[in-house]
Amino acid sequence: MRRKTKIIIGSPIVIAVLALIYWQNNTPSTMNQSTIATPQSDYYFKNIKIRQFNSEGNLENQLNAQLMEHFASKNLSIMETANIIFYPQEKTNNAQQLTQNTWQVSAAKGEFDHLRNQLTLDKKIIMREIVQTQPPQKSQPEISIDTSHLNVDLNRQIAENQVAVTIKNEHSLTSAIGMQIDFKRSQLKLKSQVSGEIYTND
Amino acid sequence: QTNTWHFKSDETQTDLKNNTTIYLGNVVIFDNFRKLSGDKILLKSTPQSKDKQTYSEFEIFGSPAHIEQKDSLSQSIEQLSATSIRYNINENKITAKENIHLIKHQSAQQSFEVKGNILTILQQPTYQLNVTGNPLTLNIAQIDGEPIVITADHLTYSEANNLIKLNGNIVMLRDNAKASAHQLSYNLQTQILQMSKFPDKQIEIIQSTQN
Image 1 (tube, rainbow over the protein chains, first blue to last red):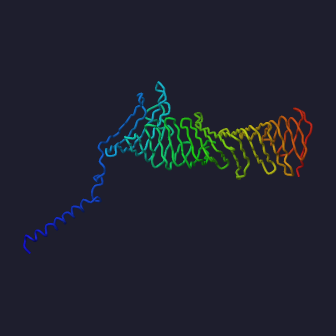
Image 2 (image 1 turned 135 degrees about the vertical axis):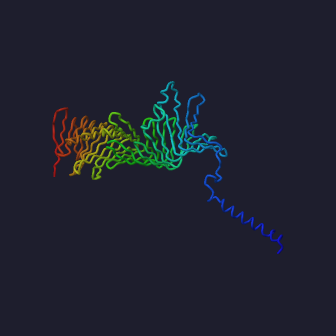
Image 3 (image 1 turned 30 degrees about the vertical axis):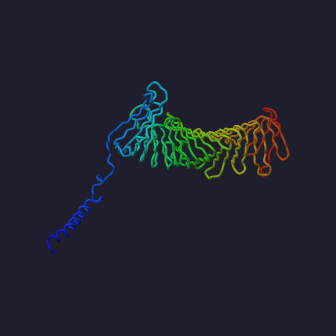
């Protein structure tokens, strides 16, 4: 067989083999996890504080997170160790406003939808009333909320879900399906199939 | 000492400001000796700074509101129903209003029933019952026959001395007999009944046979 023919037949085979070897070395299982083509955050912050004020200039809420990564494609941010503080809006003229019900809700994970101004909290959700000082006193009784997720509407200052939830505080341990917290009115509602334990000092 | 109650209800609403929770719809709250039930039960928990305790008070509404108490052998010793009942756990005090119906089982021989408008039970240091009605009706079970039925304005009962005392517009009915008086006392243990026609004046004693 002439040498030129050999080259014509052989070179595609060689190229194919080389391509195969390259493809095998670059399949996802072997590539480093972080370089998998996850959507790329366009910016991120560390130890961020986002404060929102109402039309009269009163501080309505403050969103804090140790890490916040923003994804332009979805216009949402993923947050780690996040918490939101809701400030009461009753008309008071002095610092006493802070002593009214200021609520803080914290969680290990959070997702913030910038468009709808809605925060979805997940994992280790803790709710606590903040009294006088900042940062919140540790001694203030906690309300731990165990649920798969909790949607917090920052505009209406209402947190809500329709799934199984377990709430524990110093007086009770309660399970239910579906909950709603109205931070403005300091009201917690459990929607159905409620059961649990109450602790009293007899 | 911390006591654990178990509960079920259709839904709840908690006022986080005032530590008040309303349990709504088919509400049952129970521990080993007591069972509260109603359409709506309100629980108010008030932390006491002085002794770090939490004072808890149940307010039961229903058709009717109901409390049942059992002894350590799970025998029913008391059943109370009314339009509304308030139960203060720490003071061990029960107050009830309207359509009151109390069934008290002291023992096989000693049980009675009361219907009235306003009731108070203090369970500490000893059991004290206070009922008013217009009139109230007292029904004392008798082993040997018809119960004694008495109507009156006011009733007290003390477990310490087993004595039921009645005051005001008393009418007693039994075996077709009827007697009216101003004051009456009945000892649940000895089953001795004393009546007086006018205040502080004794006229007759009716004793039912023991055997």
